[in-house]
Image (cartoon, rainbow, N blue to C red; front, side, top):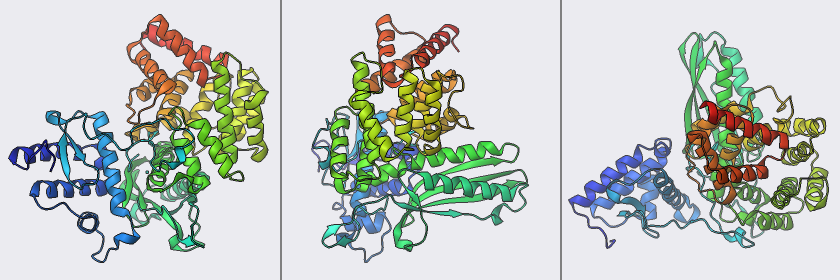
Length: 545
């Protein structure tokens, strides 16, 4: 028993009150498995009975059968670890009642009350260098079961997947992109809707396209049997009137445990709104910093076990200093022939270009950064990040026509990469045509932020910049006002903070404005685009728009 508590009436009432607050939060509302586990631990913690065993947690709290085998499945441990992370995320946004927060002490399955400075996370942010691949834990991003985008988020900014698959010749089989089964209500529940057939066909097309093009998952083809898929994505329609319907969308693991769910409303007079929101949900789930990516990293024992997990790890830590160069080098060394190699070369090129900009140099078609970019394009001439980066270099030189060719290739491959879309919008605003495409990318991606309790910090920043560059200060303010649970550091944190203050308060000191201008240069390389951003900010501050 902890020294700072006893199991009297006061402790029980305080603990029940605090847990009731937590259970009303969106993270737990959208995750019934986590809510059920928290409620179970609450009752065992106040009962005075012995601490529950992993078997009791698996069977009594998580619904596993009585013959459940702990030795062959780590599910209860995974859910306890996820609960600890979700509690940490909750207290990053909410003050504890009576100055005591709920914690689960390491090595114990009991809820306790502790002062906010107690119960530090076992996953506190740390500098990550050459040893990063040994750290089997993901950087915190978005709650583990909800809408990253997560997130956007936030994401982010990920239950029931294989951390290791069946052993072959004594070695674990590399973890590959998980397959997703798509299950669509084929229409009987919306008979009578004016455009029923078109709604069903368009929904199927959007979902299958997004799942097939995702960087972190793939559409299940049924070839290898049911054991080969790890997730289910379900869309079920419900008729409201001859002109209105709603779709219940859900992501579940193979054991039918709910990971994410939500409702999308359909109005026959404005079908575009439904399709756009559905795409927003899919972006949130399948982006490199989204729900599935978080799930995969959270349940993985070792990020070095496959090139896929190497890719996810790099994408998940974009807003953290001290990790990228060494981790990218490590992934290229360990998996030189990987399908993700083009991404890694392009990522390293981006890092080098940013270093050059910090030294006062203009991004150019020479040097180590350009060499890495050429390597990426040689591997995959249509790689979304590499072609986008080539466009940024051309835009920095003022070559709109050359940039347009790269942007077209990048845009066609970036439908599940919202940060790239935001990147494109910001830089391409320097050219009259703007971003290539037939949609409103910032408005579309902003819907990810609306559904995400923890937007990915890197995406969050670029969406804000892109909204400003596109002249949409209202969207930029909406995005900037969203709190990011995952703690960005360094220039990402500083730039986000200054932008938020300027957008919400309309003023910064002269030194702060100069710092903001200097930071934006790291992310937006086109001088014309930066001028547009500066003008939009000044006009917004002057008019209060």
